[in-house]
Image 1 (cartoon, rainbow, N blue to C red):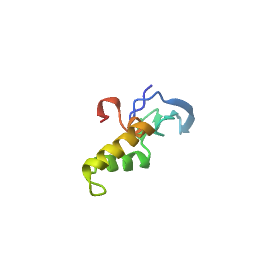
Image 2: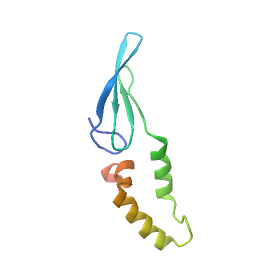
Image 3: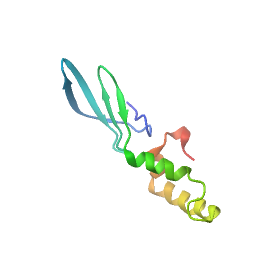
Length: 92
């Protein structure tokens, strides 16, 4: 199963009981998203993913947008942050 946040393969880490309903718990080792399946599925993306997406979308963070875009963008890709917070089709 793929992660709804970054499209990486998520791992089954256990189960929980909610009354008579058994729910599988999945975790993405790349971005940390938790997925709980069962009666009602939901995805909980980590707060850091949201903050990184907000940082990435900020047009001019430190004054010189051209320099910032190059330096931050390269560092972002080199560290793998871009692939950890976005699906392949949403990566810049």
